[in-house]
Length: 414
Image (cartoon, rainbow, N blue to C red; front, side, top):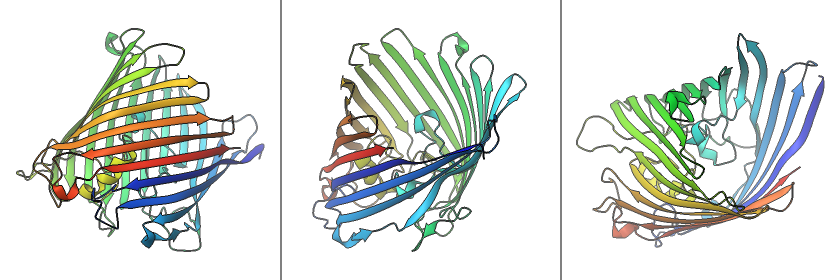
């Protein structure tokens, strides 16, 4: 090959501590306290086999060890395996007036801030987020682009063998196939927006025998727009409709994700954000299924601790639906090495919850967040974070204890 770059990309040390994160019940001994350590290493390589060519081969392997202090029943979870979370061939070529970048193989894909497309492997947390996919990115004239993606995921990613001394840990509950078509226009579309995105996402799910898996054919259509009103104010709106079949039921769902930002434009880069998010919930008195599926958006996008709490409804972590969310968020920079951010969220349920521990109201609760990001130098960074969730009347007296999460993280980049 022309050249190869082999390096240890990151070493990560992380320790979360949680109280009552799932059942919201401090008398539940299996759920009352969680405390574990995570140690992760990633080693990557980039190979350019032909001189003066855009063709490249990207490889990356990840190993993670977890040690559970609480609950004691979990003991040590060694994760005695190495998995490739990046293994692809990528090249760029001109196509008429456009430029086409093709990536075939295992890769990370994030679209639209990760609302519906970010994590293809939700069961192993942040150890991996990869997709096994073929991606074709067209860079078009006049600041426009078109992204076409085909995805095929299996629970154990069997097409690329793992290095493992024990049973493989599944990365998803089901076999998944999907098609994404995503169009972006940054050339003042409609004469008003600074940028618009329009997308179509098809996702097919097959349970493959997993108790939390689903059988589904979901068709999602969405559009978003961003407008900078003046030097201080920016607004973004997004709406998506979802149709198809889920576990034999007809699907008809709706979602929206919106943000109003005020930038102070000061030396500390201070900003305030006002968010409103809506994910429709399933109605108990109809034969259709109205709950919006967040597709490949199952990650702690809004909250770490609330992603665990929602697992009791869907039976799957971070599978958030049936939600109104209103939030006030802020961020500021103390100095070039320290960034602070925080937020206050109000959660409501459009449809009354069902199942054990359900109350009579629709107020899910309120969430307080605080986080400090710090950069020691170009090689070492980390953060401290805290979240505190207070349940509302959507939960019964059996599930009304606050949930707490604290975490520190230290990352080394070599």
